[in-house]
Image (cartoon, rainbow, N blue to C red; front, side):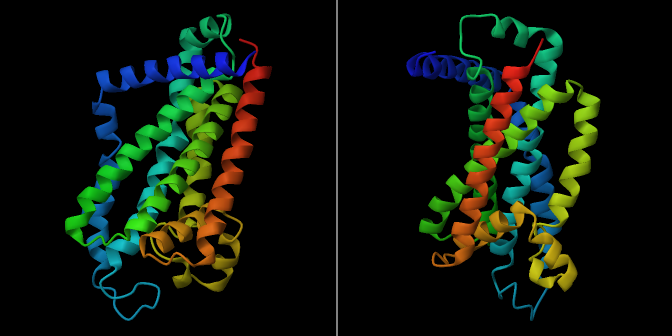
Length: 256
């Protein structure tokens, strides 16, 4: 398998996924419903929190939105495997795997599409949040987008690996729901973990999303010298690297 053949196959399949998305853009809009509810109905409840060092005055939305964006990655890219389950059950994946294209092109093209969709949704949410009080550091924001993209790559790859392993929408749904809720609550997505009891903070340090959320918040606040930024990038990069490897190995072992 040549590198050019792989790149060409990934590009062709990626364009196919893009065309499918643009034919039914309603699903991208539906993906914004939950984060919009949190932004418009939950975030205003935090505006009256005063005297809390973790939430500087006038920065409530700026503290909250980065966590919301990570949650979008968790429930967007992290649940991408359902599309692959449907294609496995329809026989489309089997037809692709016997075609003269590299196997790796199948998950890589889907992962790229999921990351692009996440990026578009992130930009839309940030635009909506601006009149609500979101304050963005331009330099920090430019660094925050690649961090979210890395997270989306890793979560989508994990989801596809699980889809190849389970091959059942019901089993995948049960497992993802069981895993995603503790990850959500132990990452400081809703509120900074500095408000949590010490034992909960200690447990949260084993959650990679904790470091990514902290890194995103530091970037949005323009605190470019904080260690949380490189720690977040390190966790997101490791997640993406390990998850991609797992996904590709799962596809190689797949017997359809």
